[in-house]
Image (cartoon, rainbow, N blue to C red; front, side, top):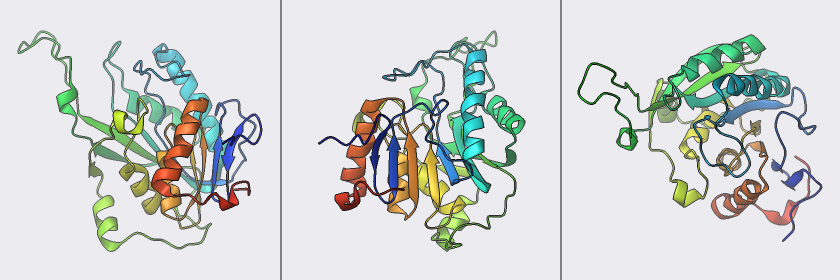
Length: 268
């Protein structure tokens, strides 16, 4: 089945849009249209993506990060929020304070800082480097956590949208704690080299947006953010530069979100 509507819009219906384009150069973004961004950008740790270079110099990686976050800033509403899933730090190719550096860049662009959620992914068993084993000469200290940095554009209080929340009391009590513990996603199950579990965008979407809001993932990958948005009655836009990942996201939306194909070509 051919889904592509033009060179860039891979798929759209009344609630979802998949755009096969580079978030930095695309002309498909609309200023002040997005309520919430939930994304996990490339970590620059040499993951083998189909179309992206994940082993830039750190300086180039920070330049890349500033460019794509600037586009996101333009697209957010004035009361829009930004949930940025990034590493705390990295040691491959040299130790770098990734979380601190990207947060600083976001603030330079104009984002305001709200808080940081620590995601305890529980993957300490995946460690392959210890530095000087049982020696004080040069040990590595590696925290088995990731960050979800919560930023916003101009004002934290959300006044636009339906004002209808769908979060339960139990979810609100648990998720407003800044420590989230749940497992990561299986690369093999999803078919993508760096997926995140649906629990991550689910929590961000229910905690930081209203029913009917528009959610954006500028690095859509396997489409997890779009699946969560659809399942919890939001609209969503996803960008990915790789067509194969657009196809994967669409397949997962069919299988896991059971999207209705009757309105295939209606506009988000």
